[in-house]
Length: 451
Image (cartoon, rainbow, N blue to C red; front, side, top):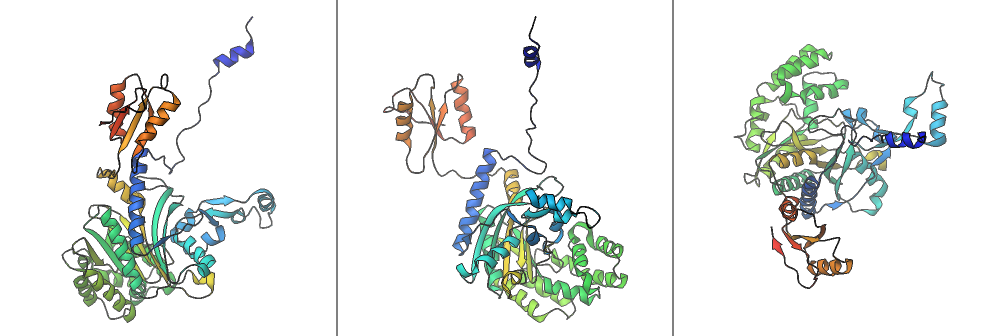
């Protein structure tokens, strides 16, 4: 008679766990990681030549910090972290408001960008860092978005920020550094679009929109390149804005729209042409600062990129207070970098106004473009596959042999020999190896062959 237990054991199949990562998250294969490492190094080293220095902030911040109202639409995309132990039990048990207060269940969250954590960082460390302070941050951020092509829930941002400089010299520094980094990554003929939140606000007020609802006006205007002027007008009317104000905005933007897209004009000429069509109501300080910045950059562009004044540029974050900018690449329907000035954010941590501005490269987007273009990062060193026979060769001999090949800049990887050696050698080139050694037991007699 068979043993039932043993019979059940032999027939039972182990349930396989799901191998795919969560939606919106990715596994990165070696080739992509190599490209990302190379690109990251190029960006960081370029930024260092402009005097920026690296810092790091935690992936987790207090929920109070993350939800304080300056993250725009990202406030609804925060990954919140539940309280733990007794704190969670207490929050679940408190039904005094008629049910469990969901806002009381979490006390931490994953950062959705690197700018809000930087403001907290400065508040905590300003006594121990230079003034002004020029920082580099490279790290993952998380947003609970609907996953789609090119959009992920975890992604990398590359930020540079200048804290403590009120003048437009800071914007000049940021624009130069970012343009230089993109150029070294192989991007050319890109367009840097620039605007100022103060000009944008005065445009809306000139059209007599409700001053308390300017954010919703900006959100609609930011969609100009996607839905056109008619689409913006319809969205604003549907949103309950004064039809007369909407009509005035459309008439204001109609003559400048072709000038925004005219790539034959230099930044300075385009700025002057657009300024001529606008009524004389914008802040003199904002207009003059922007004009100076555009003229300065125009003088050193050398055909590598184009600067364009775009009074319809908004950017979604609620913390911007002055100049804002985005970088577009011909043929791409999205920007690859963006930033702006946020002079009011740090004040809440230090009790005084601290000028600040920053620029962020959309790392995932530029990596995607480089992959589509078939870009391969340059390999500066020799990479040798040391093929050994695990059934024959001794640890001592293999150690001595591969160690004799290790020199400055040379990579040596131990690779166990397979039955089909020729096929294995053919595959080494695809894995990034430049040469190989088939070890024959003598560590003092090695023959390096090029792939």
